[in-house]
Length: 246
Image 1 (cartoon, rainbow, N blue to C red):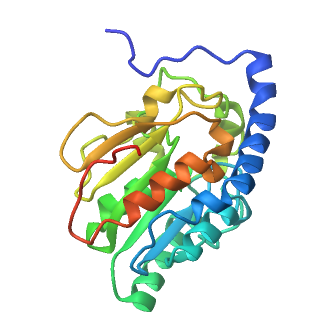
Image 2 (cartoon, rainbow, N blue to C red):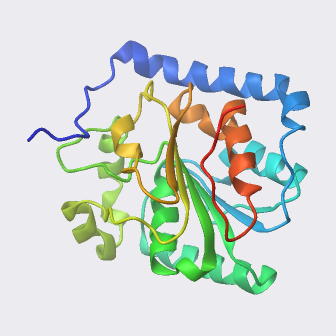
């Protein structure tokens, strides 16, 4: 049976266009601010935002600003540049989640961009009582050993620093059992970095895949994505309904 996440490597032209497309989405974000202000406000619960591979909290600044503008207690991960699952990242994320629980005394939503979404899912799998919901942005949590990624060469180059606690899991492929918490997987079929089929879940209760138009590197400030995030976060705690585009 063919690998369902098999991916044709992007052309040099497609990869070269990834950066300008992401910049275009940032420009669209600025232009869409009047409409984005009409997105639903939240209940003030904490939201932890995790950056993608090679990125830091600086990359999620527009998203966290948007969340604060709509009433959420938005937080970065405070762990520097995301170079993969090192021991410092694994332990640091657990400490960060624990500190936010102590600070807010209520479950948090976690938004993870690309590799950050894989971290978010694993946190929700280990301590579901701490997580209200998970939203992933182009996160290749189904990436198998026969799948390709434009980021794989760099990821492998820094893998010597990755924790032994995740090496076996990486060889087996990430766990795919449904999470206990609601999940929303946002993806784009024009993704030039990871195979989009690796970013979606099997259909089931309290989980949904939502396709958007955009680049892998621009989803965190894509206006359509922000409207979807606002809709998902505004659901009352303990409830869930599928997203319906307006």
